[in-house]
Image 1 (spheres, rainbow, N blue to C red):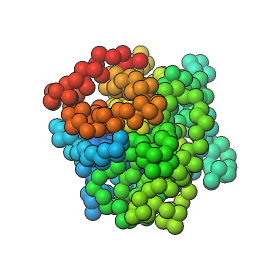
Image 2: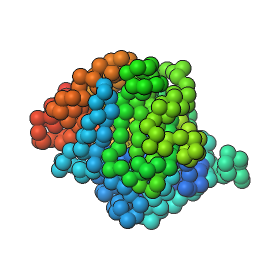
Image 3: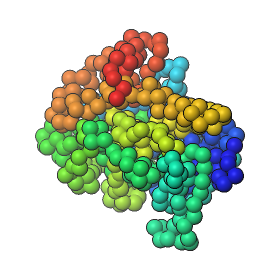
Length: 429
């Protein structure tokens, strides 16, 4: 399929979940794939490490082993704290997704997915930093990338040029490739910020992930309510991932000191949890969460954006892995169809289906999410919602399905039909 001067049918830049999924599905379709990443695996990545049932379903599609004997821990659902209430919300039992979530450190998860793509036939080049796209002089279409060896940010070796018929940017929130082509983040899309660290803790095998919808800098109800939400994700290996995040309805920088916020929250953690400095593993690290398709177009002129590069984090819950895996699968299908076409126009029509399919599936849901973010930006509004909503089981079951994106897209019960109907009715901008 490649031209005589191409190094591969497809170049994928970035080997996080979205990039590795794209490389895997392309290789499965018989395409030659070059997967490039500036890091050496395993590598550190800031994340909550929790996988919703939607993400689990994508791993199952990929044939990734998710046996507990292989180091995965399954969870039943969310234990939610807020408004003076504690509620356990089991993952719904659906035909579309399994009734459990999972957790695994991103250091390990990303290594598994890179190896999975490699085993499918993708050629993986680690410690290879992409510095610029290569454009066709006549058409301006992306036909490759310029890269150089790197070791911890230090340049090693000369620049190289790699060429392919399609290039996929899976290079994260800053996306050097998208930025080089003028695809700047939209200012009217939500942006989240998250910080996390690890603790050794007796809570490591808790079968519930926890969500703390209120963060107090002292005793709950008798101190200051701080912005954001917190989580505790047991990892089953003697450790837990503990973090907090907040979200803004625009991408304007906030003035919140998140590490100080985290320290004040941890200072009031129950004694038996062992969330103390002597049990902490590594520093508190932070990352931005680009939400609601904040960059586009998702395809144009030979370049596709997947995962964080396309702003695919959910405004409802900060989940990005599930949508990155989904994007890789959909992108690979569009690429396979496009490269099988006999004309340039036919190829471009097929490649363009990637954006339309992603927007059709998630655009309306993300629009609802943007409204949700505007509603809860105030800590006091969040407090009122949790105080009066958590005690009502029907409200919380509906809210759980909505926020976790675990609902039947067709059929299902009344709450499924309401959520699906709303997602279809609102514009998928």
